[in-house]
Length: 217
Image 1 (spheres, rainbow, N blue to C red):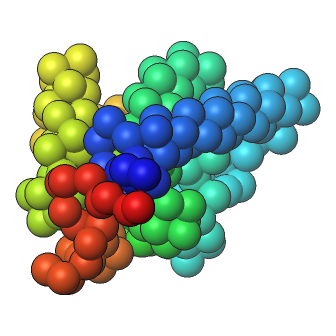
Image 2 (tube, rainbow, N blue to C red; image 1 turned 180 degrees about the horizontal axis):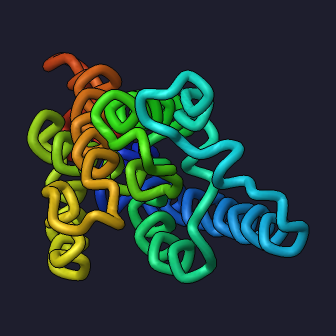
């Protein structure tokens, strides 16, 4: 009997396990975005002022808790709509590499992006939104493509770059209404997370590393 061990490797492009992991990750990310819409809907319906209460207020202690809460908040539905598709797309490919890596990487991105905004942003602003996380996922895909030699991660990064190339300039101080600090530090957080939680390359004597099938009687 001839077996193809690679077919069970969710990290190997083209295998059944790979497509299965992509499918599960896509469903999970599609479930996350409605939660953000519910939060925004409650904020507007109740007039709760979530943004002011839980957003990042740079250089102020009372705004430090926003480092953790701000990615769940947005300045209206238009802001949320613009973040939804890239969040689902990028989050799917980052999550497909493993739930534990995804959660820890997201935490690093949130911390680096949020603290970067808190230290360098204007104290007269309130910063909310998942943009920092989105740029962090971009950083993960780019770095994985280089360090893990994962060409499909790099291909996704290029695809998103073509689709949202205009938004990538958000890492530069071009618009006062946009927190370029969150984008820049989010991207850096993604790079750091991808390096810390990178997948170790298998040993040379690992039979699952081989491209050729394994034959059994």
